[in-house]
Length: 175
Image 1 (tube, helix red, strand yellow):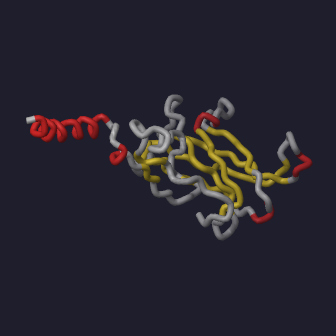
Image 2 (tube, helix red, strand yellow; image 1 turned 60 degrees about the horizontal axis):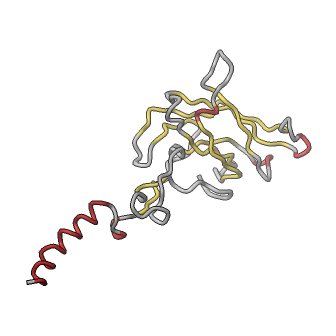
Image 3 (cartoon, one colour; image 1 turned 180 degrees about the horizontal axis):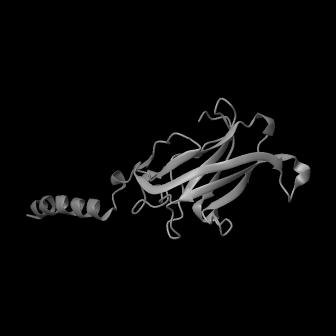
C-alpha cells in the first residue's frame, strides 16, 4: 500500500520540482553568437532580435589623452546612439582594429555615455588604449547588447541560465 502511494506521488513531485526551477538538469547557460563588427550596427539582444537602436562610430583619431599625455597616443573616437532611451541603456563593444580587422583594444560603450553638446545630444566620445596605435586602421562596434547579462546556472541554479551575451573580444581576435 505504501509503495503504491510513493509510486503515484513521485512523478508529481518531480514535475513540481522541474516547474519550480529547482531541478539542476533544467538550468543551462549558452552564449549568443557574436554579430559582425562594423562602424555602424543595429544593436541586437541575446536572441539576435533588433532593439531599434543604431550605434555608429562618427569619427576617430590618434592623440594623447589630455589627462595622461605622457602615455602617448590613444584612440579618441566619437560615437552616436540613435533610438536608445534613458531606461534601457544598451551597450556595445568598441574595438580599435588594424587593416586586417584584428582587435588591438576593446571596451564596452553604453548609450548613456552619449550626452554630447546641445546641438547633438545623442553623441559621446571615449578613448581606447592600444599597444601599437600606429597600426590602428579603424574603430568598429560589435552589435550584441552587453548591457544585461543574467545570472549563470553556477551562480543561481534556480533563476540562472539562459542565453548570455557573447564573450567580449580580446586583443588579437579577428573581427
